Image (cartoon, rainbow, N blue to C red; front, top):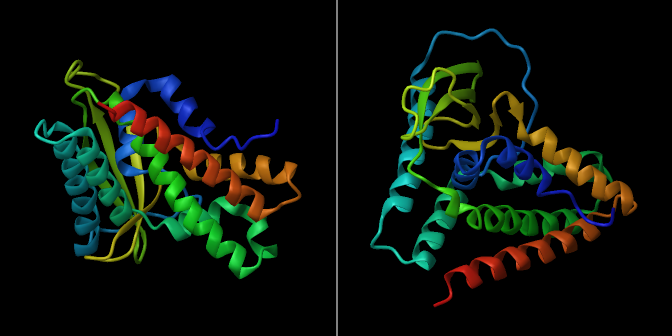
Length: 236
């Protein structure tokens, strides 16, 4: 197989949950940093509450953008692009996705890769916005695993099934402190997407002599494809 399986993570969850999950993957940019360690929860602090508010406020902001009928498709994409750029620590996300290839790559190659990864990730999510059908996420709790390290839990609220006794759970890994939070990973129905994406990248690197420049070039090609797809969809 001579192509990166980068889209496999999203495809698997889209098949399982349809456009509901596709939308939230798009808005929140669910990718990777670290696997979770089993650390006992501590009493909620002011930063815990702030991390929980950070997630809910940005979910609501993303939904407001999608619901705003006064925006053109191009304006909506631009605003979602800005939202994702501000929410995500794409350097940490991208470097984690490289796995062991990070240790053998030059700094120049890593810099090029991180830039390409950010463009790829945001462009790929922007193309999935058409699946939105009025759903929302409701934040339910936050766990403080360590100073500056939080898991914010939420459930999917579908207006077509408001009484769902078993809603899809979406958890966000948030690092930082009040005023400086960033999303670095998330799980859907218990599956953390960061490790899944690292496996996808690892498959490509394993077929290309662990060449980070080769992965960078492939990400750029995929980004161009996503942008062409989005531009075609919004063309008059």
